Amino acid sequence: MGSGQSTPKVTAHDRAILDLKLQRDKLKQYQKKIQVVLDREHEIAKVHLATGQKDRAVIALRRRKYQQSLLLKTDSQLENLEQLVSTIEFSLVELSVLHGLKQGNEVLQEIHREMSIESVEKLMDETQEAREYQREIGDLLANRLTHEEEDAVQAELLALQGEALGQAEPEVRLDLPSAPRSLPLVSEEVQQAPLEAKRERVPVPSS
Amino acid sequence: MALSTHTTPSGFLLPSIHSAPPFFTEQPNQTTHAHLTEQWTRLILTYARHKRLFVLRVEDAEAPGSDWDEILRNERINRRILPSYLSSLMAAMVAKNIAVYEPAKQTRAVLLYWRLPEEWADVLHSWATATGQLNTILTFYEISDPPIPSPLSGIPIPLLRRAITILSRSNRAQIIGVADGEGVRFFVG
Image (cartoon, rainbow over all chains, first blue to last red; front, side, top):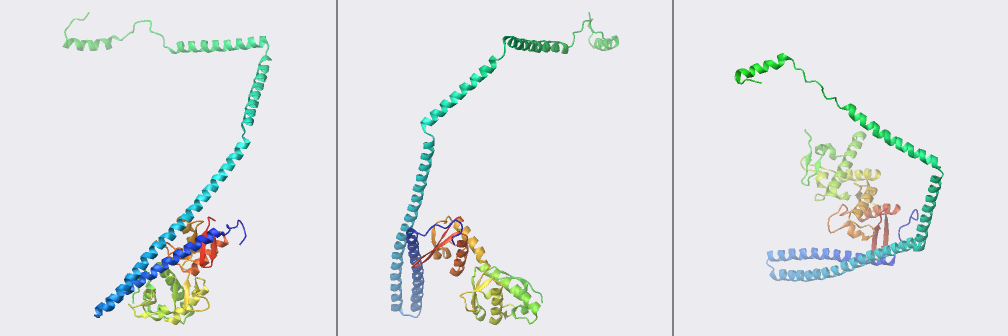
């Protein structure tokens, strides 16, 4: 005991709940007992009836009826108790929800305190300033280049562009096959053989 | 004689040794005796687990009609264990810490540990977790006799108390006492 994080303290609440639950258990045990009595009276009535003692059987059944009414009464009491226990437990849950909400609210307020509008505005202003400062530096650095240097840069750019265009066109031309300048020469054997075959079937003079 | 296993009416499979007549008498030979004690303890514990029995009494061997008849007697070979033998078996089990005399200071009844109190503690805690009863106050009665059967139905209060004590040592449970009785609260741990 007492080592590590200790278990929560037993409060008066807890004792009250336990007391209620113990009461409930007692009622349940009582019901069990009544049930046994009910069964026993039933048996007794049966035995009496078997031996022909009808009046005794009636007495047993009457007792049984009384016990039955007791059982019904305890049922409603049990219901009350259980409802009370559930209500208490639910209220405890609500309490912890409330506690959670409260804590969440506190945290949110803490965060908001750190994040006041002025400080955000100030921060945004500072960011803006820093950005402008950065731009000025960039301008300064860019202005370091002399006019001649700037011209040279432009010339280089043009040269690069020209090179790109000049290289792209001849490459396309080179890839194309040159068109034939003479008529295609076909060997006579190849040309005549199919023609003769054709003539036999269709005897039309060709040009 | 051929020894065979036998299934009891309650669905428990008896080992073949249970139909050997010498099994039911205390053996003079040390080795045999030790072996049979071993067999008996295993049989008693598995049967107890099968039928969820927690208490074994010497009386169970004295008269028929107890929950233990299926293993303490074998009508097929007309044998039964003698109370004196059962008593010595119980002593052996207590010595091996798989049973305790309950109540203490007598040797007629034992509480069987077919689950050790540490194992019961685990069962208890996982049951409380699975049924969402952490941080709720529970009475011993509602744990040992719940309206719907649970793995803990019928657990004897002394055993339950032992398991809870083990849990409370690791801050996973807390015993709450009032004038009328006791309750317990489980934590995530």
